[in-house]
Length: 165
Image (cartoon, rainbow, N blue to C red):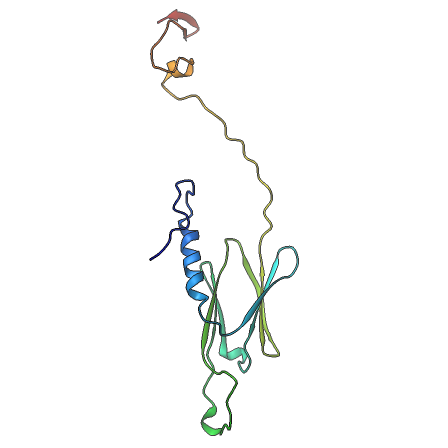
């Protein structure tokens, strides 16, 4: 059963946000590979994944709409090797991160078994917009302030001359 977070009629147009939250909750069930998300500066983020044993050729990073998807698939080279103990995970993975509108991927690099992905989010400028209140077209009695559609003898200006209706 799905609980609707934005079911109130006061939340207009938040359907996509609810879908993103649903996708994020599905993706967070698996803990492999472990990762960190850190803030680097006022508008920068860095995702760091622990991908020991993976090479750059084994990793793929894609941006699919508003999701950052990181996939890892190692080639099986253990056919000619004999392991007495195998404790380093060599399984494939897919880790997806839901990104807000406007977040850009700036770059990625692999260093000492850690995959780093840098992101930049735009810093929004505060906006104040004044909405003008206009008179309704074709409803002069409401525009005169009577409000009920009945003309109470208020003068009407037509072609520069005043007449009583």
